[in-house]
Image (cartoon, rainbow, N blue to C red; front, top):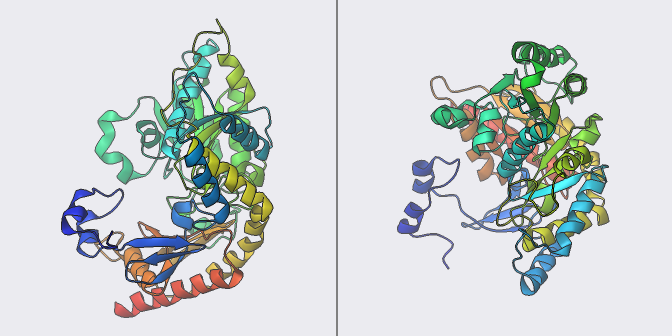
Length: 444
């Protein structure tokens, strides 16, 4: 098969989150991936500065995962999860709960972060109903939050472009906390900002407005990733936990990006020392080899459903591909590799390297802010007047020409390199970003 699709083929795929007309005029095609690098159709080798889409901490085509999937497809290619099961799914659930330090918790498997969020919201509302508090139906999200693209996810999410076309379809009874980033108070922060704890108190205002008896759950990303690596102020998540506990509200952490080591701990909950009632995960759970996600739920939530006759389904929800054997095999191999190579600790070791490198860009032309946490960092750039998001795209293209693939969104560029990266590769990525900023600035 040709590395370059035909014109008809280019027209056939309606690409997600992509400027389709612009892309198809000058397609950027990936033909292979190995380690921390992609190879493009024109032969260029580029450093994967965002681990795919925050999802490939082991790099690409790791031998342990490749072997596991090849073996699995020849043994059990598919198994239904409705009224049947396969052993590896149960043992994977046990391993994930153990890795999270919550061995009594239960895992509900899905196929993506979007499905994980919608599943968690359904569990939250159904849990309160099962407890006899059916009035608790309201969900509290946060401005600038990204929780996937399911109808529940965009309803509780707070990114304008993801919401504005779909208002008639959104779920009712949703409110939003304010986002936690103010560059005038916390610009160029290294790690958690000192300012902003008081923003958590807005949850008390929302409770007073709606009454706690109507609120089922609060959902937040511990670190907001897709909107540009927004880091919570010191004490902020702890305060949300206290308020939720006080009012009997479930706290959901969306760890689709932060789960499985991005902050140098198994989950962000470990990094911040805050225990949610539910955690959504996906992406890095199996190095994104085969779609897989899930919800980690406290045992008391599960136990609340386990009433009534044993032959009756307790929770009417699930997916054909829940706990797909190939995805599960890839996840077991990924967890094996994370442990064998001590990669979560490696991410923690690389975090200060990335921090020092990214903050060295302060003072560069176009840069208006820098922030970082764990093995993730972002910069904001000066917009082109009247052309939102163009500047970051220009820097992205310059970086790609210099062998670096970044993530751009709005006026933000993000870096989240694979855990297998070397210190020199991380410093080199930031050097390429510096050159790209200078090139765009010089071009005017």
